[in-house]
Length: 109
Length: 114
Image (cartoon, rainbow over all chains, first blue to last red; front, side):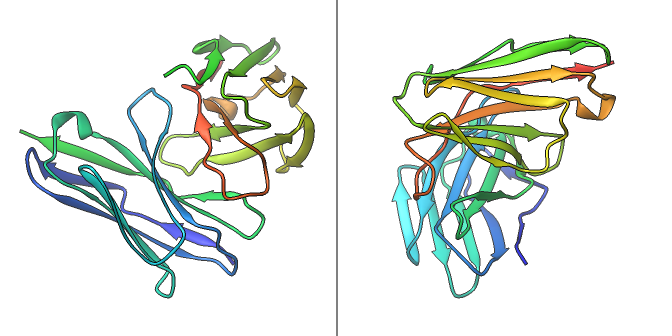
């Protein structure tokens, strides 16, 4: 079967670093996506990993381990505007995105 | 960001009404998607169109009827909805279906069924 899991909610402090984890199980894998979604707005693409390893993109970075079915999104130098939901999704063998329920990130001053 | 637009942004309808949601993408993509997003639940894929042809219908009730007249426009026709259909309906597009392509989303239509 297929499943994907991420924490429901996380809290972090402005200026700090936070890591949002995502675990998944699937027999067919075509990459893992992270999206950011502010309340009432469109999900916006953050990152895509299909090979193992770490990819850095400014303050946001993502990591993937295919053997462990594990990914994380790392946010550095947190700003208040980073308060949002972060959606993890893997693409299965049929190129369909299987979504997690999202992690609501709350940034405190 | 106006790559994918959706109208209306908010909709309130009774269970006997008929309404339509509209999506338009200005990205030159050939695949378009309808998703349902309910609070604290994963996005649920409803329909997929690839080059104007419907390729997937994920067991969606017939009270939801999609239409894709061309690669830039996608509609979701609604009739005799139920209160549990209240949700955020998101449209997305990608270059094509069947590849490792990123999907780009519109802002959604917040639907409330009374």
